[in-house]
Length: 202
Length: 202
DNA sequence: TGAATTTCTTAATCTAGGTTAAGGAGAGCG
DNA sequence: CGCTCTCCTTAACCTAGATTAAGAAATTCA
Image (cartoon, rainbow over all chains, first blue to last red; front, side, top):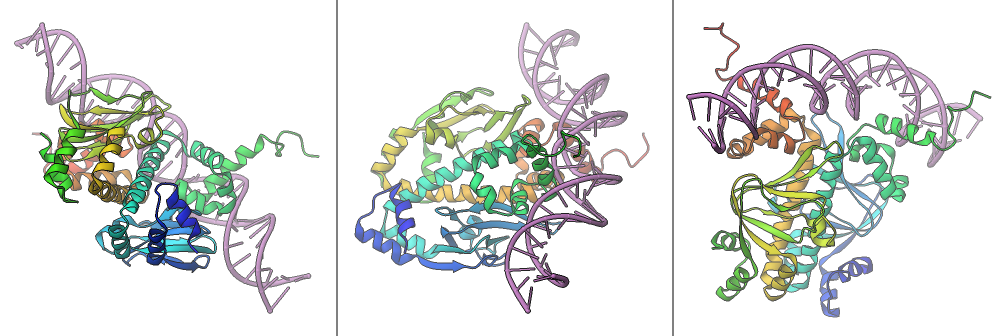
């Protein structure tokens, strides 16, 4: 059931069989249909989600009323609204399934109970969160250091499979531009390889 | 010597006196003159810094050759280049003292040795990094959801002391705009409270 | 004290990317 | 087969914020 999760943990720390069983006991498995929400703004976001299959996104609604995606999570990624998780306050964000998805749910109170019993997991999450911090720092470097066009190129080169998998407008929302603009960039990019425009019609 | 650091740790976990001593043994204390660097691009960023006094910033040089600040750290904040710390690869970033500063230095190999001996610190860093993750998520919400003007207003309302403390052009660099633009925004903001412009000269 | 250096401001001009509007194309369905 | 819904594209126009350039304050230091 949680093989992928236990394998992921095993990348960072070693658990005894008894501990692994304790882990499994503290999670619940939940299928999420496409476009269904695990969290909606206004609710407290009281759990973390580990994606066993499918894809989630975290987004919020801007003042202008548009959806702004700030994170995606594919298989073997964790997703949570940490502000709400830690404060208990209602969330500003939504967590939604981009495709039919299956998640392992870890309720925050149960997480703390689990970590108290399995100290190796403190280490697992510490190492994981260090990587999250590293990824965030790199993201700011890309964000501030590159134009939207460069960010799109970099992103599609780095995660080619992912670009196929999610609709353009969600990718645009994540990169911080409009679908129209992405469309323009893609049109330009495509020209290099046998697109229209060079030869006269016919 | 490390009273502020031990007090910070005590906010999250309880250490025995022996453990506290071990902690102190694994750090070194380092004064950093204004504008001096703790890390420069090209070097591996192999340590984390806890600010005992003063102010650090983390920045990188963009393609255009301008400095882009991505993080500040005041007293009781941690700062590190996590990508470089974890990978051992040369860093893309610089860590510089904005004012005369004193830091507690935790070398990464020594950090891992320390955490192996004081498991409570695994928990301390896990809790800390959860807050870092929360802060990062909020930062994206502000970044994507608000105009530069709104971000400046929010920032100066949230950290009034800080705005006094660092030069405008560094704040601009952090907020992601030019000093010229910040200047324009401030001029507008100031008008409300007795600035020039309403009454005729004299 | 005054000269050098650093920081801040103002204003004219420019541009990346947004907005609006319209149409096209694929997928699921009766 | 055509209808509806979702997604993508193109193109004309618009705006937030950048760039450039020139001074004006404020610091620093001899």
